[in-house]
Length: 390
Ligand SMILES: *Cc1c(COP(=O)(O)O)cnc(C)c1O
Image 1 (tube, rainbow, N blue to C red):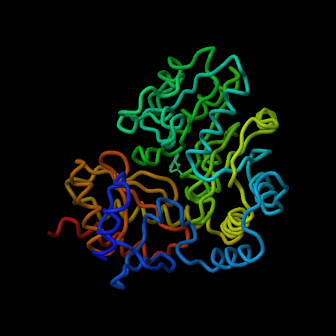
Image 2 (image 1 turned 30 degrees about the vertical axis):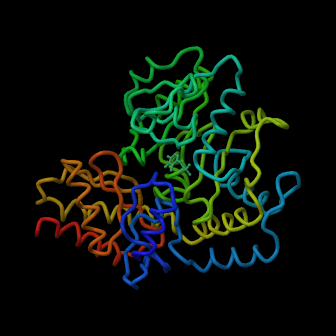
Image 3 (image 1 turned 45 degrees about the vertical axis):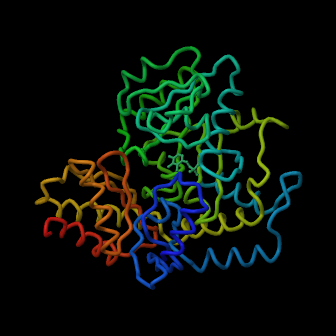
């Protein structure tokens, strides 16, 4: 692998801090590096590979569609895109879909749509510790200064409210507020779960004051939390939902879903994307989402997520650094006392053939593919139980 590291460091811009490993192939919950060593993948490409690696459904869909048609542009009608949109609409509270290629792009579309919706309003309220992407407007919506440093001036009109604090939210909204952006579970911010009462209050306030409620479900969507979409846990219906990560089962795709009256503001020429929803990604995405829905993977995420959280809490009781476990379904965070310790857990996991990640300052995140089995979870839990031993 040394030659891969060398060539990468030499020719690829160094904006990522990478672990010193490269994978040659994957199968199910396992990845294999160039020495043939197996790793249990409990990060799933950052909540992307919902069906794990080399899943028959994904591979067959790619092959089948690639042989027929890959790209034509949105100058023409696209059957596969229409099929995917229908599937998403029939399984959500929304009525229309716009397709793009990534999470940041979906959020950019949401910000533009919110500003178009009521042209007298332009402010976007998002949450402290949120993450909405790296493009300029999505970055402005991201409530973490560490990502924004050096990129001034960011687009105007973004304000941040404390997460899970309704009184702070009320201080941040005014007659110019177009929309509020919410992650039901902050992913990059540390696996922080939104309180039911908080979301209900924010939602009701938005409804009463003509503010759009935008759910960033880029990480929580597609079954990850034990519902197809995390908003279903909260008894509310967002005006706009943004999706990406798990939506393509590994292929790059983003989507914005909106209620009819909101969606209709995106008239001819208002927005677009060359690649968005091309036949290949749309067909693969439809195959992935249908498989997740039809094969009990959503209930399984809930059941196995609960199992994983209970077992982790059990084996970590005697770890003096342990502060608790958070999450919903297979989006799980283990909180430790110190940032350095959380880093060391991720590093030691890798040494032990387990891929996990960090979220926020002191949280280790586990987001395995939805096809994970109890025995895989047991192996990872055992690793956490042995943290004290050396
Ligand atoms: C990953 C993520 C994004 C950004 O998605 P990209 O595809 O990397 O642009 C936005 N919001 C949330 C909640 C995410 O987890």
